[in-house]
Length: 217
Ligand SMILES: [Zn+2]
Image 1 (spheres, rainbow, N blue to C red):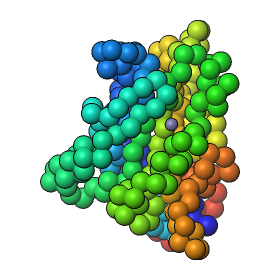
Image 2 (cartoon, rainbow, N blue to C red; image 1 turned 180 degrees about the horizontal axis):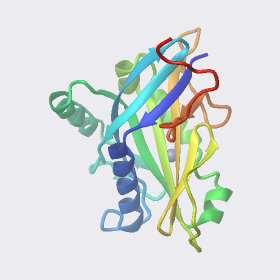
Image 3 (cartoon, helix red, strand yellow; image 1 turned 180 degrees about the vertical axis):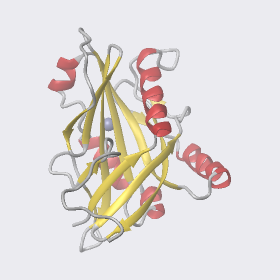
């Protein structure tokens, strides 16, 4: 089975946080604490059994239908953004999409297993023909979950599982979870799931050195 190492640019992370927090705090002008969604661009390379996926950019999809517990993108809007990015940055591939999970507080996140992908997320991911056609090596789905904290303590980023990171920003807590699709031996669409995922979200690796690793020898 392929292992997936997922990295992201600072620009990507900033845009994901901005998109999620605006939808949370100010919504669409009619309601707050709503979900947001948008396409992800990046590139991938292969190294033995490992696929390295770099998430480079994202765009927030304004025309998506938003609610507190669902968000549906307009296929035409995604196609339009894909065509624009083909001209602006043809070296990038449309890899998949991100969406946000807004929750009131930590209790609500814990009660709902809020930072996990929902069954609905997995179902729409598996059914997205266009995304799978574009990504024969597997599309990407990311969820950024957030809630408000009652107390703000000094914290750093924390890996909850290989595919899930947690961090705080001001009085808000965030989680990032990533899932990759793949075709099984029968050509059926599968995904790496929530737990026991083969995705390694490699967010803090600049100075990480493997034991016994050597270069140039
Ligand atoms: Zn979701």
